Length: 301
Image (cartoon, rainbow, N blue to C red; front, side, top):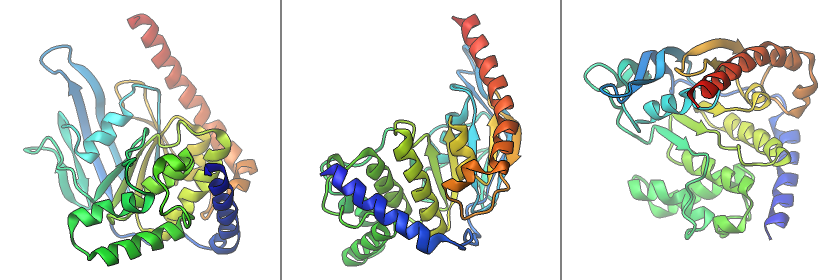
């Protein structure tokens, strides 16, 4: 059942990308600008005092796909969690569209529907259908009627290539389709920012390639800023407007790379000379920081 649905959705998506995406530019976006200003995060300041984030400053324009790459344990997820409001910061500040999320006098941001996290391990309700999962947030908010919410959910599922899976449960479709359902569920809340924590890490390379193009297709249809953590350099360059390479712990920007490959993109860009140039530019820095993290791990071990 899952394989049949996958083949249908992949075929439908390929046709949509060929006929509908060509020539479409990224949307004009006026919301979702993030300013991370001199942020420090120290765990257990009165004890072991582990610095996870070290005077980190990043400005992310509204509507940008900002890809965050760095060694495991360097503090990338700590930074994402601070934006989401899952834990506090020690000093510095984070603003969203000029409004303080956390900073002086308010060390921890308040979680809200303007910032939605798509987790690595998924968070769909297995006892609800895909349609019910997508409609859940707006139903709880109660701002629209039930019929309006379900109409919107079906429309967004169709745009994301999920028609025909509305009545399936998450366990009845592949991991790739479940990822897509999660993204649509997040967008149903009309967020300013989507926060991705390695959402495709567990997928095989073929499924990943389809999901990357599907994410871009969804992005071109929706006005949203994306803060995306990954260890996959090819993924980061293919998707992102900018690539922020983080240092080994404590986390701070080591190098910022502008991915000046025009949108809309498809997988043909992977063989372009500019893609290879950006890959070479970034690879040395990523390897250097990974080596530092490895060496530090050896010493600590």
